[in-house]
Image (tube, rainbow, N blue to C red; front, side, top):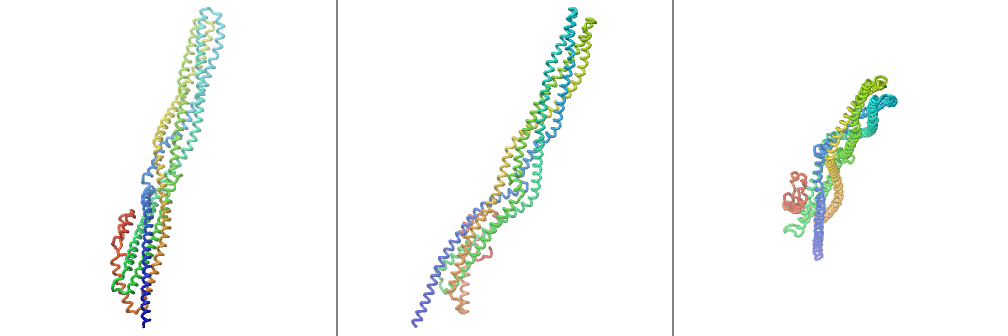
Length: 588
């Protein structure tokens, strides 16, 4: 009898001792779980803080990219402004090329007229050559005349000599100048022709590039209006994925309160509650805590995967936009092409202006020479007519046989020849003068317009280039942010997955403790009525617990849109406002 009583006491003591040991281990593990949950959720929250900062910037940049894709923002207008700034100089240079054929013909006409004038001047000199021989002959004849007639003869001879001096000095000088001018025209014409042909190829190429780029840009704007909507969808999906993950972080409140409640209950069993009911009640709470941990781990893991997936989709949507690949985001795209075009047009304008200046300088001597030649030809024609008339008068005064009548007749013939040459020369000079004047006017017009366009492009160029560089850098930076965000989310997902795995291990350990508590309760050995009584008592305890434990859920997610306020929410969760029962897990 005593042995049975002793055995029964020892059994009860052992049972209580085992329960105490199990409860002590459970309490220690629950504290570890609370610390582990706080560490896991704190780490994920910190990661979300960084992601939130990135996503705010990303959202702004997405709006910029979307506006660029639609062709409605300042960046798109900048591209059109640059194209418009290039249009004037391009049109001017194209006009110069169109005028080049005319200028080339004018230069050829001027060169031909100069050659014809050279021949006419040589013909004039040849026409005057007989007078030289006649003067020698008449000087011999004059020695046989009387003193009075000799003086008359000498006066005519001196006039002819003065005419030769005029021809020898003035004509030869002008002929030399005319030859030099003709050579200058040829040189300028060859240089201009070569440079214009080179410019023609460059301008045609640049015109085609700019025209194609603008047309492609307009086409891409229409195409990207659809793609921009696609990009916007991914941006919104990314927002929603982060929002869902933030909501999932509130499991920390549920798990912490559950564990704290169990710890508090483990400290002291209420009066009037059987040990079996109390063990079953604690086991049920521990199982609930383990299930909540698993569910939170699953929700967080799904949320992280969703964020990672949406980040990749957003990156893929952004980087496949034709707008960003082939225009603003590419160093070989439209921005670079426009930058190169600005520099090319600036160079071609400078070259065109220099060519116009060179042609103007080359044609200017011819312009002055035509005026001088007109005066010289007129003077020679007048003087030869005067000599012929004077010789006739003198021959009449001296009488026949003096030889002056022969000189007068020959001089009259030469005068007639020179008059015809003078008329032709005057006509040729007028033709040359008109061609030169038209050429000079065209060159002056091109030169003035070239200087004006060059000044404009020099004034606008630096600002446009700076804006183009800023546009490209900004767009590339936006895409880099998208790429870095994708990499960041992937890295965080991997780190957080390890944390969540450790959290799942805590749940497995809690299940083991719950199983031990149920084994200690030995409810399977009880009769049906006793079990039903235990179940009713446990349900009463659980109902009271449900009414005493609360957590909060944030319902302002939609109103706050993309501003997640993670730091504030983290603080709110720490304070654990009481608005919703933690057992309403299905709300998540």
